Amino acid sequence: MHELSITRNVVAIVSEHAQQRKVLRVTLEVGELSAIMPEAIRFCFDICTQGTPLEGARLDIMQTPGSATCRDCGAEFALHDILARCVCGGTHLVRRGGDELNIKEMEVA
Image 1 (cartoon, rainbow, N blue to C red):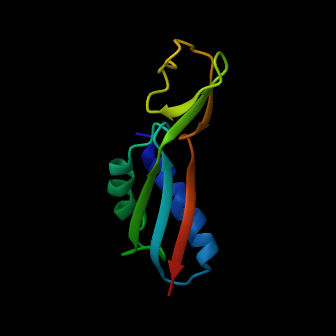
Image 2: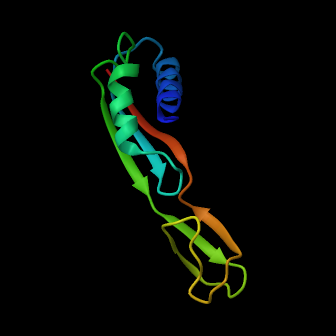
């Protein structure tokens, strides 16, 4: 469950940038191929924010889709599984997104 350590790091980063101000909302961008479970982040968020400027803050998670380009045929397509193949059968794929974890926004009082 690496989501606990990820959430702790998110809380630490947001707390540092909030500079002791109350945080009302945090928006995360989580890629579909990142192997991060948004439900686990939500579960850990309430625990990790206790006693911090984020306590009681709303957490919004935007899940971004994965995409790839096939080196064999040049096709660009949505990628929902890291082991997927191109429609041409090619396995030499360049991922173009879907593995990110970003703090997109934070709202402070």
